[in-house]
Length: 205
Ligand code: ITT
Image (cartoon, rainbow, N blue to C red; front, side, top):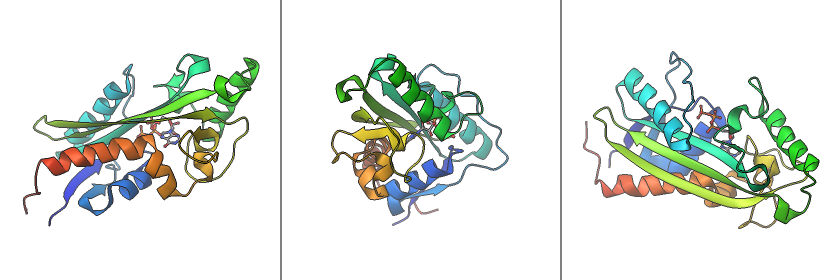
């Protein structure tokens, strides 16, 4: 049977790897066009930013496109960094700066007990076609923020996120399949894949 082909909007290579690992062989995920300008993610919601990314890639490629927007919501920080997770540590921030800023803010608040460190990852994925059709998948994973970073797998805030449904390890300490089975992205993409499957088989080109 033929596979769906989609162009990925993500400029984050770790995210692209995860998307491919989760979707498997039923969807061929092509990399983001190299000449595409950076998309300004200035919407106030994950949905809004995912749509900005999808629309930019559909317009540039003329092909179906897939975008993921993800945020980490920390209750003690009233939902921050949320939709601003990528630039939390400043305009040039890398993953380590981002999670160190988060750990520093929780420390300053004296939020040291696990119940004061409640958080969740939330992902919205949108698959968009040039004719305007859209499919949307959503995924959430609840957890707590670790007091010190642990593990060098995954990316982003993974070394400081302990999912409730795990065994106490951070996402940074888990193998990719373990993370995907519980993660926001795994859930959002599996929901999207189910909707795609319900559309029926792909027509042979
Ligand atoms: P694109 O917009 O190009 O897809 P990005 O890395 O900017 O890539 P997001 O805006 O969705 O993507 O990411 C927001 C932040 O959350 C960013 O700092 C990521 O590193 C982080 N993040 C996203 N997914 C994550 C995951 O599964 N685990 C840990 N951190 C993650």
